[in-house]
Image (cartoon, rainbow, N blue to C red; front, side):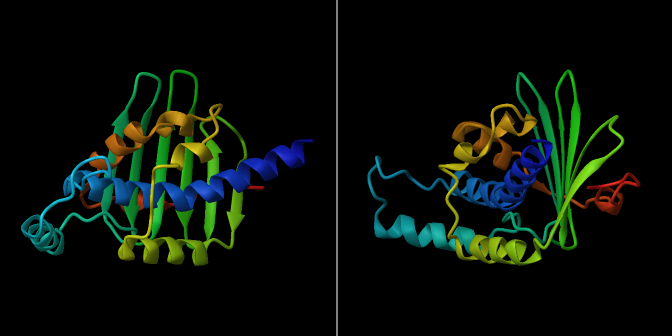
Length: 189
């Protein structure tokens, strides 16, 4: 039973490692450039031309190369994310626990503060490459992201589209301390 729970958790986390950075990037683009939803009227040609001009000049377009820092606080938890050179570190904290997620090299690591062990999944570099390419081509949609987030996890801080949009808007281009991407010296399973 414990193996199935661990496998399910690792499978979920590996999906999030791909989905969250993509969601952050796309959400930032949607809100920064004011892309209108299908319910609103379509922009005229001059607006489209102007939008393309702005997007090509953007220096803060979110990507997995970074460096980026994102910070979000809700009523139930706080999240800090650091992205640099296809490495991602996410810290989630509520009143009861603090959990960490790290993508470094070809592996994903997950551990909780105060726990003696963590979880490790390797073989994800091809997924990161695909996510990075999808982001650069604008092929990612975040509207269904909340369907992949379990409600019993601190990751549920981003369980709604509006929360995900707020997280993406919080991201700023900023130098990131390389120590965030250091794998802790605890045993990983």
